[in-house]
Image (tube, rainbow, N blue to C red):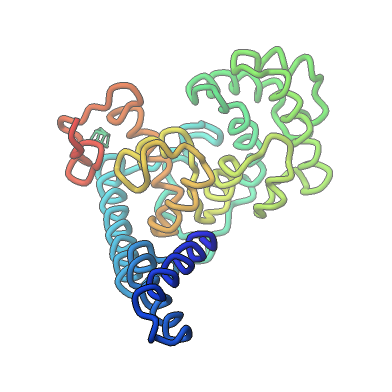
Length: 299
Ligand code: SF4
């Protein structure tokens, strides 16, 4: 930027001085600064002008409205916001959606807290593995290790043998054992409601942390998994080539109402399996097509 300013200034001064030698140098400077602002800065604003700010505000508002429409469409399609990982049985899965958020007074039951470590384990196993496979594997895993303490003390070879079908089983088994150990020693066997504490657990990234905070404590958060990243990109909330989960989490957190975020992410996983599949989205007949940029853009 400085180089461009300097070049503009030197050339401008030279040209103006050659033709208009009667103008004082200080006046030339003022004229050049003015020209620079009109010709360059207005074209590519460094500090957003009022018009640019208004445009940004309008597009943010439009994105929030579109997100609200997507939330409603998914609610109609999937009234129950079901976590694809079956960590706590049918009872939990059919009673927690639409419950108040933590700020609105939600308090998880002691039974739910006692089981919360299972969601952590399943979240870790789901990396590069399907939720369906994790559900199958975890039936055996939780039968053998029914409590967080038993998992923390479990033989690593036994854990590895069971979680092997989920892939990356050495790392995953070690992460699970270590994380359960920390839960037992530092948090009374219960998943903490603290983003930094969760992120310090082995194998826990923002995706799992948001899932835990949302499902266990009803703390709003966007779980930017592969379905969420793909579909929100197709809908046009950001360019489709954006694949970074943290970026998607930040963008979508600004557009989706906080209290809807966790359930939206559960529903979008179902939608990604049933309608907006990775390879061949079923656009014809899709209830989102009116608001979908991917569908509207020329093929
Ligand atoms: S219209 Fe097609 S691309 Fe858009 S959300 Fe529906 S299935 Fe996905």
